[in-house]
Image 1 (cartoon, protein in one colour):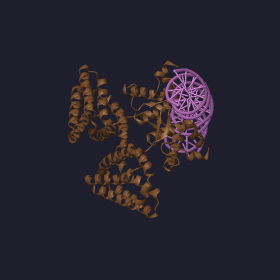
Image 2: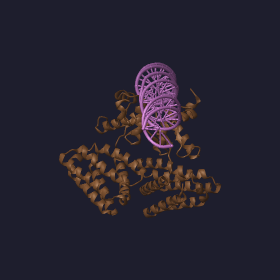
Image 3: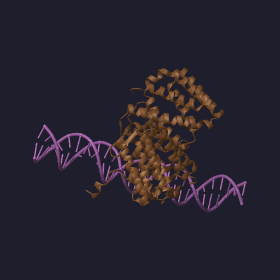
Image 4: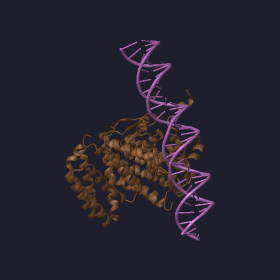
Length: 216
Length: 216
DNA sequence: AAGCTAGGTAATGTCGACAATCGACATGAA
DNA sequence: TTCATGTCGATTGTCGACATTACCTAGCTT
């Protein structure tokens, strides 16, 4: 028995998909770039089948676009795409946050409080990568309490795309303080359980990010 | 050049996925049934790779569920699932219909009129299958004018699931007349371009279907 | 020179086989 | 009996090779 047996549980294709995702986020692979099955198979030292399956995963998450017999390309984020993502995010989050309200108890608010406080730390440390993670985590946490597995799944895919364009916004780095403030307000709105206020804050928060993204 | 060249354009996996979809809709394959790659490969006379890719497609549409090293199963539609689908459908359609308004001109209303009138015919002919198609077509047509490719894609997948549980509702067959009336009202609401009214009609229409589906 | 046709090359689609893993059953010890 | 361990068959994961298709280029025709 190999020692790796204790580590490897998920299929190789999933691992490859994750590694490709990272490469795109780190800009090692550019938007619009063509991905050749053979090249990647060689680069990752796996077979083309595995790469193919990884492509399917990334395709579901909207990171990659495959056309039959034409190849697969890293999805290009045009202004239209960013607008679509913003629109969808607003739609899902306002709905999910609202529907999560009845299931948010003190336990949940404590968790969110913890996430938010960690954000404050990361802001001071100027650790933007962790800050991103916490941002995503905060929103995912609430969406999960919408209790609709389909909406959660859609949101997970959407978050991959959100992250993709956020990682390309250097401007965002300069506004770290408001990053924390925004989530603090969002959390307070949730605690108040005031639907109107929550929707307002969610929309404002997303629009705030959108403003940063003009001209991606 | 082979004569089939004119026919075969899309990958085999897509064709297989469609055929599997039909089999599920026709109840030739039951909910929750396990799908064996080898068996299906033999049945359709293709390789396992092709079946695998078909599974990935059906997985995206939510028709089957694959778990690593555990196999893939036809998705089971519990009451919870139906509730989720209804919730998501309402969310997407109200949003998409509302956002489609500015792009709906006389050309579009004529098209919708045509679809609706065909429904009247099919009701008289008692051709339920075609009626289903027209129903799906009507809603897809409007959603397409939301101009958000991501929302359209989500809706397409959702419609596959909607169809899946509609095909299992014998009760619906008895209410064919109101089927036509419902869409007539929906169309009138769209023509009026009254957001409030449209949302109302969409919600009513979906809830009407939901009522039929209690206890699936 | 422009456009069309044909052929070659490179990439994707499909295949069948081998490897790793899971589940069920059998076997044996506490 | 009950639980742990080992073995076997069945099924999915991964692989490399062949088949088919699309893109590019060269050469021809007008």
